Length: 134
Image (cartoon, rainbow, N blue to C red; front, side):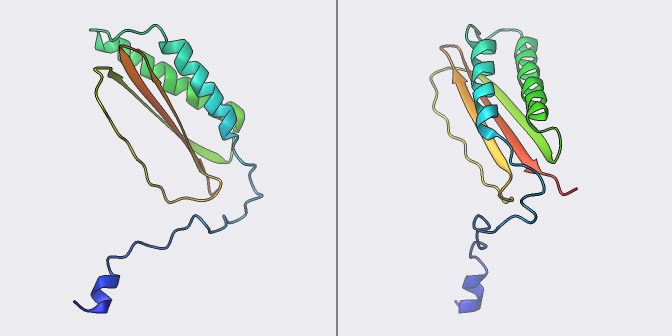
């Protein structure tokens, strides 16, 4: 195997050390404020939740959580960022699980995640904060 063909399979250089363009343009997003909110929201919304036979109840929980997290993100920093919120609720059957994420973004971007579980359900909430270019 030639040296040039083995170089084709190398990972790209990490951008984590690269400085963001115009970092002072938009203030940093307060991730800890959102994390605390998400933790309290999941606890308040789901602490007594039991896995329902009615799928609409799960959809309702997820819609309520994602909308409230998105609204809180807009309260924290109303402009300069794009926001994405993922919510997943599963029945807790004492199963194992694993999730991972890789990203390619600027220093001002962030991922905030919170996990809630009780004897009946497992909820994962992930909020992405991406600095907008405009």
